[in-house]
Image (cartoon, rainbow, N blue to C red; front, top):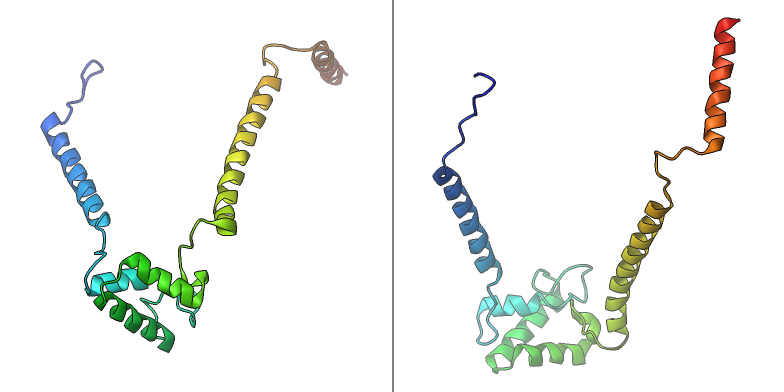
Length: 170
């Protein structure tokens, strides 16, 4: 290849099929991920969606859906009974909150102190980012132009050069 030659590029059609395939995969992932579990009926999918929103009261870090503890099995049986009675998801979850307290929910409500606990970290991170932006702006403004050399710097360089010159001549 000579200096003036240009390397051949891949045809546009070849590249666009790869982008189209990537777009298709992204859309498929969104469709699968956006599937909403049923909110009525008595299907296992609805049962495990509801059970996945409740903490196992006997296990640490497990949901009622994943636990095999006796209380988790009892809660799942109670969930099935309420689903057969035709209760909504909100009614079922409220039943368990009334019975065991709000700590049974994996995603507690945003009311009262709980809302405060959810908001404080977000506000703290936002304040830290704003503080960093101001600090960086101040540091950038305090920097001196590298082209500006102070008289003190000139004297320091002159002394160093003189000392070096004396050392070489002696």
